[in-house]
Image (cartoon, rainbow, N blue to C red; front, side, top):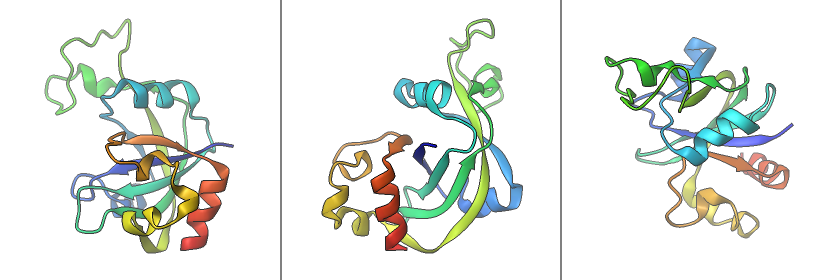
Length: 150
């Protein structure tokens, strides 16, 4: 099993939305490095920290699980979608997504500030300045450290 962190703005799609839906596609990722993780590395059953970004207190708010292997993100082909990519080709998909399943909300938000205060997390991409990826791997040691902060 692998561990991941996936960011979303709570005003766009938050942990409450995932809880209501149960399982939902994680679509709209338009970064090649993140796309490669969705397409090539994520496996059914992998665990995910759900992170709220661009909000008053950015941080980890819940846990989800990867429910499907990566598959083509058809929002890239839909001109009505905000994720439309005119260079996408249905025969050679450019963008991928996975479905994520709600597991639980955390008892409290683990803020970015709290994560940065942990010296054992200093190599985690999330806490490094300038890291803008919406999807990133989490090591087993980082996963355990973060759970202990809850």
